[in-house]
Image 1 (cartoon, helix red, strand yellow):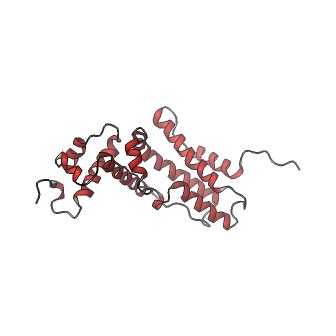
Image 2 (cartoon, rainbow, N blue to C red):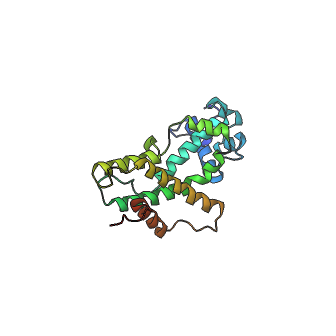
Image 3 (tube, rainbow, N blue to C red):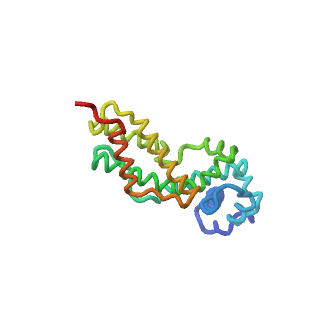
Length: 210
């Protein structure tokens, strides 16, 4: 066995490349991406520093795969499944989707905030498929659900489903980021989620005069 191979791999089926991604992913989950060095990752993986360059073009490529894996793992750890058109009620499904999306953003945004300050890493991550919702992304996932409900007549035929999906994902970013930046800001409550669903369903326009 090559001395470059990590002791943690002995007797296992995982490749050294996968091992390096997993080691970097653990660091990303614990510390985020800012300030991570090749030496940090090598020590976590129990390999020599230069081994990383046998499998990745640079540190940014490895970190991009690690962030990608971290996002997928965070989504996989969530309880429940995304709503399906025609099941339960639209209100209940939007509430479930918002609750799930807020939990996911809470899990992934601490690591992602550092990515946006690193153009090289951001560019590498953009080269990979979307890690969420089976590769389609959260907005597309929710848009697809709402289209299905529109086809079934459970939402208005002229409903701008893309706009609704953008609002839902955007509000998740906003609420979670505010809480991360200022922990004294209250975390989203079930009542707030109910208010958001009610606003999405009914809008803010006054009723038409009779």
